[in-house]
Image (tube, rainbow, N blue to C red):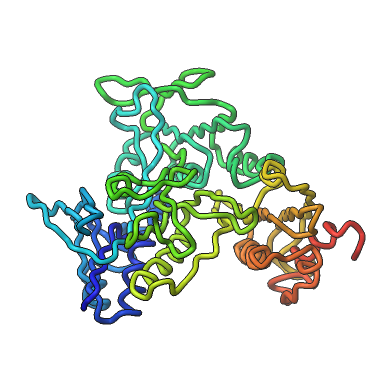
Length: 450
């Protein structure tokens, strides 16, 4: 009998799950449903469209719905909102235009993603208080930004910093508000974050740290000022970048269990608590490869892989396992690339490790080779085991991405300080000194052993 696979949400996880299910079961009836007009979209590209780096917002989608349907033989339903799930009878109700359509399923994959966090504060519903979620909204957001002179960005995480750079590229006056003492509070240790503060200030971003936004004031329904616990500031627009939360509304209707993070609880096969229902991507909870503890990470690379696992297991049973995440991430802040994987020293201490770190500053080329850049590298290890449990890298060279990816690969395999030191990394004057920066950091971390 033909297996009916229905996937709700056509972002990274959903599109990946649909493609994998089709590849492993050519006879399955695969339906991919999304309430927006795009599929396989990249919300992380929105700041770059706002700032003018990306010229066409349509480029933020990998496939058009028509291409995906034709090339993968998948029933793609866009502008179609799933409004209810009957888990007992295995039916999804979907609003398409003025009609509600029933889709039967043998297997359901929830890939509904995440929603922007909008703090419950006075004035958050004023016109001009803007959030980023889906690429088809990018055109409107750029138009809003172009009409402004002074813009507030709320939140010093990845999106907030990328927005600050995008808005400065448009010539806007930018104020960045972060309630914690430093930007990227879950990404970097505080002393390293100072490098980012200096870069923001150098590029004329007005930085407000340890300052909590408590409300917005408007005139005729339009935002005109930001109110914090330290003062009030006139603005033309506000961009919210305080993070995201899992979009679990449909999951709750399906009766699946939520985990301790508030995301959908899944096992290593992406199975939820309800038989026949899987979850993947930003709606789903995952776990740390370092601590083994449950965590929530809303990043595209793990979302794609979770989608692969869910799609495979939807048609093949327990065919693939998801190993967890390290939270590996990188962003660009003006002329700096900022990357991390595993745990910061502060996080490691909070999780009960006995962390110790080494921080080095190295060139990304041989000392005699022209050009190149400088990288600041911090490796953090555990006293009891000698295992490296985290890395942070900041520098002005794109090679920073290679540094953090190498560190992530090693940490994910449980590498020790010795393993880092003896890693057989490449050398060429244009690409690295003979002593690669990661090996230099491991050498310092060895406390005189090497």
